[in-house]
Image: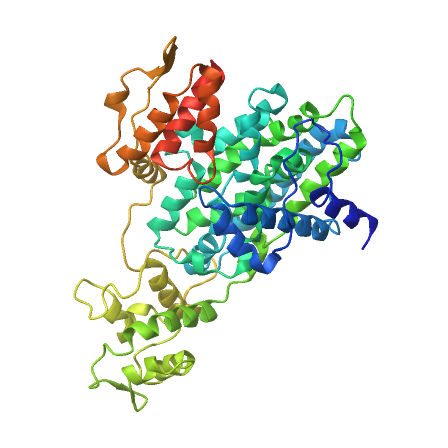
Length: 511
């Protein structure tokens, strides 16, 4: 193993070297059970439990060490001198702007979409990146307990904004959940482990920030830079009738002037040790920066879409349910539908038989196909069998060449309201207390003015009462903030109690 890899592995194993930022270290757990990238999915869901056990935390450390060792072979385009970070960031932003202008000129001149051939392609992308988007910002959670230290003020500010400052209409995880739900992009949990690597890295960093602060800062520096693919995705999603607000929100808050990109660069300088080895600190920042390259990236996910493969895989998951629900009176290719569906591995042949029998007319508007008529309309014999995403796959596969690469693929089944304003209004309807609550302190402890009136509906009241009872134990502002910290975790922050806790923490932080 190369010296660089040995250094990275040693950093997370065995006796720890002195920590550059003086945040202390937890005891080194047993690494008997290790996880590779193939086990990222198990780790991902394990870390989303309220209290990961010692074995899971040890696995997360080992997983990070392996990912860092693999990332050591990738390029880090950071400047050699930390003082050049601001110039580097602005230069990158300007380059992305030029490339995006070229893309727009290409589209104005009649060029096709660059990323998404069809609407189903775009919806596949939304589902495939869900494991990462649904832990958005998680890598910064570990700095929140250090709210007393001014060196981490920018990082904490970034994290709170990822949480929407407790506003359900701006909380990134809730926004993405709503986006998936609006298009019925379900079963993202069934994705293979490769889609969970980046999310597992972010959750693991959140659990081990105390000993990996420079790496977390470096990871954040890379993640908050504005990439070209974000701009193009937002443009093409909007073109396809998919609300792009989640993506456009990141375009605005990650700006290089005063947004997360600028704050991320400043946070490197803020945390720079004055007495420690600054060069060693920056090497670790670069190591964390490289972690952004691990797992499936946006372009790899987009390039991995195959419409027919996705269609057949979807039909195969449906087959066991419908294998005994069809009448034997209908025969396709000399076999009953039940026979087709009860025989594993027959989806390709079954679809071919449907096409040959005239039930499907490929490369024509789907409305010309008898099979499509079964799925649509309230009185369709197969109404409700396929959700919106699945119907879009069927629609686009049947349409085939009749959909030009640059055409707009409208929703083939349901005429939904598409405006960003209307969608955000629905997001704001998430259950939770009204805004405007104020956390005050007396000699007897904290009290929330008018708290009883702020209690949410019965289905979430107990959780919020638990938060109130927890705060009642605090004797001062600092103690209350410490008690609020766990509610800001990737597990809780998007829940009604977590949203309330975020607002109270933010209010107390500014006091």
